[in-house]
Image 1: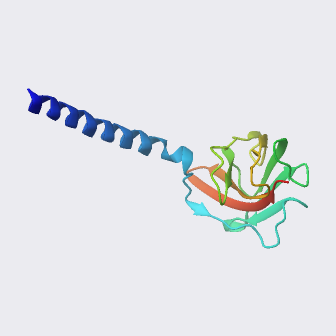
Image 2 (image 1 turned 180 degrees about the vertical axis):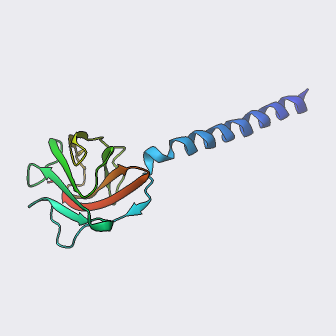
Image 3 (image 1 turned 30 degrees about the vertical axis):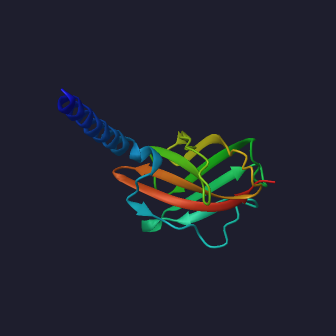
Length: 156
C-alpha cells in the first residue's frame, strides 16, 4: 500500500512538472517577444528631448516618440510609432527595466493608419530612484516581426 501511494505521488509530481513546462512554453511569447529581425536605433537617440528613429532594411524608417518630455514615471505617457516604407498590422511597445524586472508592460498601439500607431503607457515607480528602461517597439508586418530597442533613463 505504501509503495502504491509513493508511486501515485511521484506520478502526480511528474505530470505537474510536464504541465508547468507546457504552460511556460505556450506563455513564453508574452514574456519574451519573438522577432525575425532586430534593428538598432540611429545613434544619438535621446527620447527625453525628441522622437528617435531607426533605419529599417530595404530603406524603411521607424520613428518612436514618448511624451511628455522629460519622460515621467507613474504618469500617463503618449506613445507614437510612425513607419515609412513599411505598413504594419500590429505594433506593440514592450517596456522593461534593464537592471530590474518591473513586470509585464506591453501595450498594443491603435492603428490610425497602417503607418501611424498611437497609445498610452505608464512606467511604474522604481523604489531605487532613477532607472534604466528599454522600450522595444515590436512591429508585425506581413509574416515579418521587427524589434527595435530604445533605451532611456527615468525616475526621480
